[in-house]
Image (cartoon, rainbow, N blue to C red; front, side, top):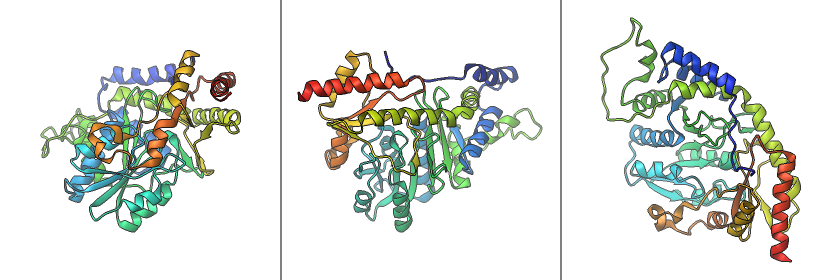
Length: 377
């Protein structure tokens, strides 16, 4: 069986890092989470970074903070893509704001032309999703946000290690939210990182992610400088990451660049085998984008039958993603984004991970070609 995902952990390094947590007694939020946050800031070049329990929690907190701190109303709008994991758009609904869907382009990311058409006097922000690690036309959307004075959130759940002209993108955004879920390129078993541009928002985030308490004081608990009397001013949740997660992240991070290089090589193998194949459309990746290649996607006719065929040949595959307008909470906008609707009906994700070999890719692509011959001959 060739699995769709196959997480790789550097076990000895992970255990060494976790052992430090257990020996010091800091298995929860503490010095190790701060150490991982500092390592992430150094790696990405962002000025702020806060570890949370999941990427979904990070999105929820990000939208909540932007709404509260900017005085947005419940009927205000945020433009987003329908081609994403539903957590992206649910974060908008959870803040009682309205999701306005713009269409995607050939990169499967937001189409700037569609985005600009959807802007109204109630538009407050845009969420850009780097699907699969792709950057799409992100910088055109940055310009739109600047033109209309809108906030920009980069949902970078798939983008750990994605670079554009060698640089980590996102410094132009008001917030960048990563996922470290078990299937992601950098995994902490689960978790996420929120990187606000505004340092004050980062302070608010640290309180809201830990029941309204200033989490920066946690490592000082046994210090004479610890403020034991906390002033909690807002109802909040326990969304903070812990030191065990951070320990795994610290062990995995030094390998991310090399592992992403391998993922890109796997994608190149797929490209070589499928680029001239009739009945298959490849997803466009801008030339200046060094994608993390979290997944490799193609568009085909009769996608569902192909997926059944691949699975019958012991090949894992998946759909990323169902057009969100098909879900009941978004049904009022069903079918308004034609490109996203088409992609949702034709996309299939193929295995693209560190355990895939050149021979595996050949087997997968030969199986796809075999299916197409049977279909069209």
